[in-house]
Length: 113
Length: 114
Image (tube, rainbow over all chains, first blue to last red; front, side, top):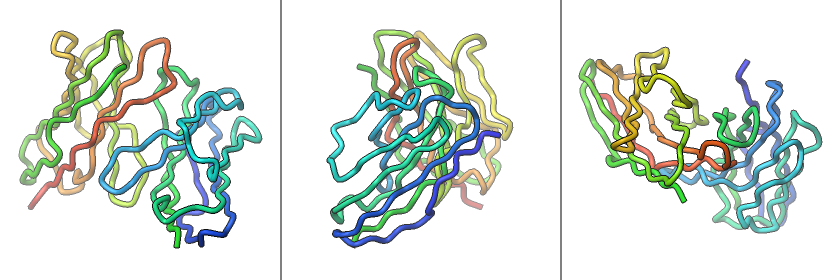
């Protein structure tokens, strides 16, 4: 099973809302990632968790707050977003964080109004 | 730092024609190489990977890629494409033994026409 699941598939939120994106994998992977992808662009790395600890934050604004409650679950908490934050948010996981292939979820299409 | 160049942003081909999507990378150390495919409104799917061993790697749906260390390339090929191969293809690299980051190329949009 090489599946990474993400919920919700679509999310529309206002600039004052608080919402969360959820990602789950049951492959025993110990690294999990959040990416942001704009139309016709490659994914941009946001955060990396390795063994449930945040190891990389690519200078992401604080209105995005990641959380890794356990080795199978990754959340992205959203608060006071801007319209330019509208994008496809992708979660990925890999066996370990260094050099292993990453498996991506289907993404959450976020629209900020 | 490593970088990835996908030389063609768009590649239109006719069904059953052969195709090559080009990928070159730059790195001062050894790398792992990947091709990902993204169909419209979907996430990325791992198409194939080169970690070590044989420089020619194949996927289950007829794609293959060859790692060429001297030319720092990892071009993707398919001898006969189908309409269903229409998608965005991303080449990516990560450093052997050291990096948590996957560096992507800008992508190549393959459009297969009937």
